[in-house]
Length: 340
Image (cartoon, rainbow, N blue to C red; front, top):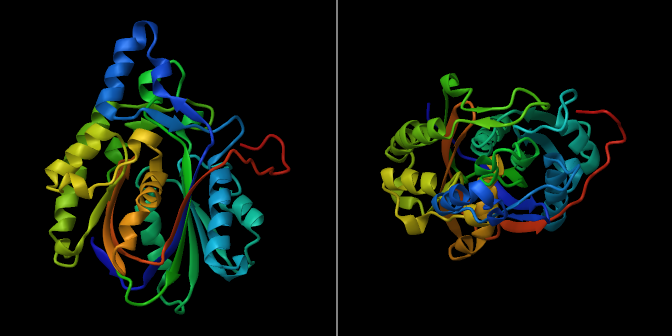
């Protein structure tokens, strides 16, 4: 069901990627050469940031959050909710949000929790924060953290899949402020749970690429069309469209079938690959100049992936919203040995 919140102001987004790049052409050797070169042409993914040994998604999110809070002037004790969204949580028990909360020195009254989602996680996280804001005072502050680090579980024996995925994290500061609407729609279908699968931290990542593609150009496209055709959305007010950066072929097809002009779809897959639930905020940071032309810019966002899970949203981005992309290999010690 499509819903609407009237008070979701994004104050800033900082994205972090590892300061280590892999050139996909390094896999184009021997019997894999033709396959990899074709894959690069089709996907448009030339290079990807990849975590250094021991670096986790939580580390990227902590780096992002510290820079974000410093640059927008928020005190950690002012934050009322910390939501960590990832399919690569650092811990099983307690949730990764507790480790992050300690590093950020948030207050005791801050609600903290994890959500296990992949490429749809950013849109779902925004919707969850919107629900949290209901019944709370104007000025309530929340921090949404999203990250996926797929490189840690993709087999080196499967270079055609490995070259799709980059690692990234992002921190999004959201404040309850009136007259900042968000319209959102979220869907899921458990029939596709095995299309993108990792049984636990000890198992390798498995993906049925053709099933994921069919899901994107059918269910996802149908939902995008449904969403954009709803009276609440006011499609004519949307300036740009941020589609999950799965790869060139999928982004192009989703945009084409949904009748979105290509010039209105910013892309970053060529430089970063598929960074999971961090791909939309990362692309927004790389496209920040688009938001400086007007006092407000209405944007569309669509995330889709593991589960199957997919969703759409529109938000207004104010001219003074803070954006940054940083590179970091920093690892924050947890003080414990043998943790997952």
